[in-house]
Image (cartoon, rainbow over all chains, first blue to last red; front, side, top):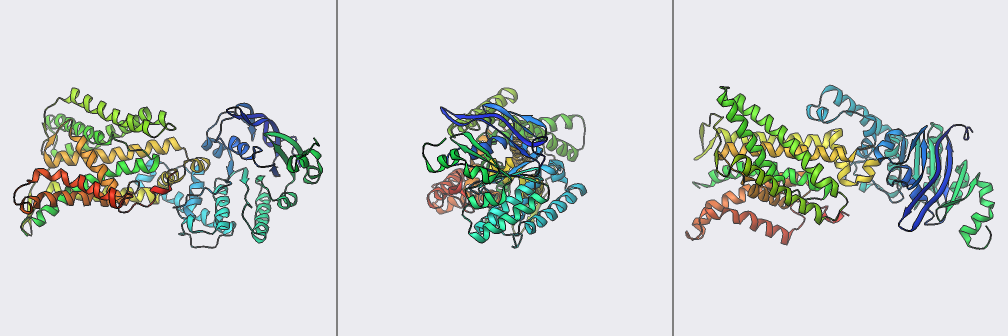
Length: 259
Length: 307
């Protein structure tokens, strides 16, 4: 792995405060191209905050991060989406009243261009673009394994399908980095198994995956490297086996003196 | 029988105008959860601009139909710029403020626009020139003139166009996505500010068309005309279910019919005690009835879902 020389995402001393609470302090890490990188930690450790910072939902207070060679400190979400960061949410945030296909087509927004003029005149270029992204959206539905009429509203999909649809929508932005916030939450063992296969397929297609997850088995079986956060600080980093034996990590999860 | 068909025609004409204006309210509400109380004034500015442009061009000797078309285009352009500016100046800085704050600036913008129009164009009623032939046609005992036919046709065309725009295009998809979940839409690469600006501009363009329609139909333009019209169109949007495009269209047409039939028959029904000048009562009676019995409107269902 070429992690150290040419990281895709690199955080340098990132800090984020909410009032007096340091949700993240001085977090540095780097994620190499093609890695599946795990982010774990107890509840409230700052994992989702870190996601929100690198996707532009929160503006960080200290440090900066570099994505694909460009440094960011203050940035709008749609700019980072264009740069190639896509994400899913811990609590599913689909466009519930839009169809499965339309949800994915919104994801194509950032890679398409036709604006108000195309919308008003519906000229040849705009129509061709619509056809192309509808086709792409159908492929992505198949890719994540949703076998439903395309006109099904997102809110009528099953829970597991909604999670997959969120992944498909994120993939539609053609990301370099796919950030997944607890994708296996609430899934049964079979669903988790097929999620694992899906994530491996996604990685094989050249997309780097950043994963927040509580399912330790999934993390251990899937991730190349893992960072552990606790109270907004990085307490361990390394390959899963090594991290699992780290006394600080055990202390963070189980409580205790070791650290 | 004698006046029934006539009142239905009048109601459809008035309802078409309400529907176009109501769409502006409902689009903005759908995407921002904000009642843009300045929208009625945008209609008035559209009418005023159309009046000014057509006055100049008629004096220059252009043919009336061309004048109408140019007046419409200029009015739409001016209103789109105005809608953009209103959002940019009065609402965007308050995007994350408590909901009461933008409501107050909305009323403020409305008052400012009314007064600017009064200063600029005066307090008097202006006659709007007759730009269409205006021939009347007998129709089953009722009369409909060219202006009214065109109003209904153009309104239908614009509403169909808007539905296609919102449901079949990239831009419309982005608008619906922002309405449903702004942060998720932003993470999918949708520039929320652009989508919101465009929403205001489309609503304002429809308002300009509506302003020209009212002026052409009644032949009168006045700086205060936007107030009551805006209030009624807002009523129509609530009647149909605010935030819902089809609801605004249905609500507008229904409100036009209710008003027109009510005004037509109230004299007979009350034995001459109330006259047709009570027509405004019906719109607001309908609003109260809807708010009491079906607060989410006829086609609305999502009110509870909004965070």
